[in-house]
Image 1: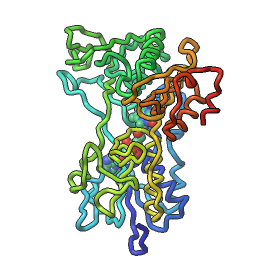
Image 2: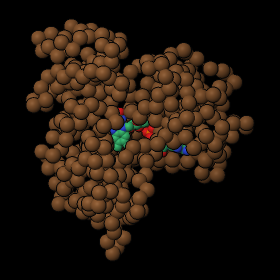
Image 3: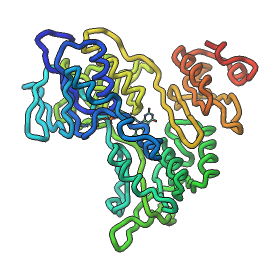
Image 4: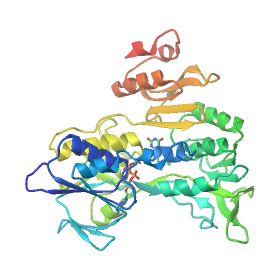
Length: 410
Ligand SMILES: Cc1cc2nc3c(=O)[nH]c(=O)nc-3n(C[C@H](O)[C@H](O)[C@H](O)COP(=O)(O)OP(=O)(O)OC[C@H]3O[C@@H](n4cnc5c(N)ncnc54)[C@H](O)[C@@H]3O)c2cc1C
């Protein structure tokens, strides 16, 4: 793809994927001019702390930045912050920006990420209802997390539960409302769901399962003061956080006529159906060689791997993206690490002790390890990563036997 006549590479978006791509291009001494356009006022930063230690006030804003901003400038990479790309003109190969300027590109990389899924029910625009996706969202929520206040979290997924843990530690009274019959149902098996349920309830969180929200109640000032459930129940609230997932940000790509299917469709080299446009991170649905199907993933690991692949593609190096997905979550003293996708398992094997808060669940399909969820058990995660990558066949007896060292399995 590298071509001396192609001089300007523009990256749209300033999140984890865009930031990693900038660094990778720098390391590879990419010979062309690079401009990143982001609607956020910050240089590329990491979002995981927004629901963890940044929300808890344990780290400052500057520590979120992937690199000090001066690094990009020194390398001649231009960051245009606080500006939104409104339109891609593929015929003229230029972009229309929200400050009315146009920007020419030769190579374009879409790193537009995702936006939060909104809950559209009665009262959903009341004051005091929060969503969590960027620094401003966390700052706004944190200001309201005062000891004794009642926070209701709609959604018992990763982010909702991380906020529950952080807010509880700050003395806030937390209720979690989850519509499914167990926590994190979409991404994990019952052992982890039940463990987290016990962890949160013992910390004082009121966790309600099978609780579907149908509306919000208001006080005289138009502030939320309660949540109405489908079964007629009501939960009092001073603050509400809605955390019910994200939607890939594909509007620009769709309007430009690029192939999209719940994500910008890309191949294993991050190429879209336009030879001059790549796409990376949360906004994509990529051809995943590991699963041999199109897959959409919302994780830092995916953003980082795809950014590195895109850097290689821009340098005309053929380096396909081919690794199993992995995730993590921190809640209280629990470090949860997950690799693979467990949905299609036909057997689960437990190793370690749930009581001692150090265990792992291995998910098997036709005898092969397809996923591992490890709680405070880094060795199981590390070995699990290899087993999943190699699609290793290991018997349940071996996996659960504490006398057989996990490391001996790889
Ligand atoms: C609170 C929170 C906690 C998380 N915790 C974890 C975790 O523990 N582990 C994990 O693996 N993942 C976690 N994630 C998910 C992870 O952060 C995302 O998967 C990752 O940020 C995706 O990176 P990205 O660059 O693709 O998208 P994003 O980080 O969403 O960045 C996209 C950027 O593009 C900008 N943009 C969009 N459209 C335009 C436009 N038209 N013009 C200009 N700019 C535009 C957006 O404003 C945004 O800055 C968390 C996410 C959140 C919100």
